[in-house]
Image 1: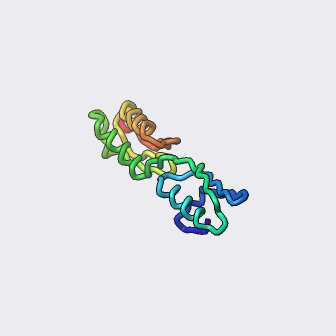
Image 2 (image 1 turned 60 degrees about the vertical axis):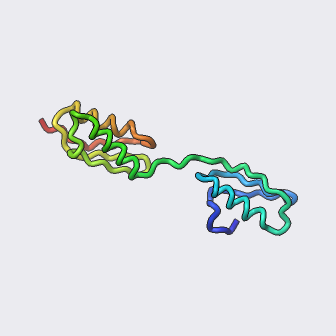
Image 3 (image 1 turned 90 degrees about the vertical axis):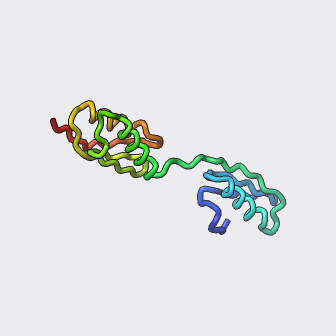
Length: 127
């Protein structure tokens, strides 16, 4: 499994010439590559592919964009007044809004984005 195209999340177990591949991958081509590498080893008679495909999560940019677009769709909220940062599922909101309703809309938009596990609220409400 010393191929640089095979993910480190994929494991191989060998028993009497049968290689069983387990683990997780995001794309079918990653599973295919692991099977190809394992199948080309001397002495391998069969490859059992038990690799689970897991859809890749959204990127930090995708999450930030999704939140900003949700804020822009809200007529009450000035989306330009709130900065959005995303890192590993954690959203950090910074900026100033003119009401608690705007504050709550911004926080709600952050929580509604895919892949969000935590929201750090640093929004100031200035009347």
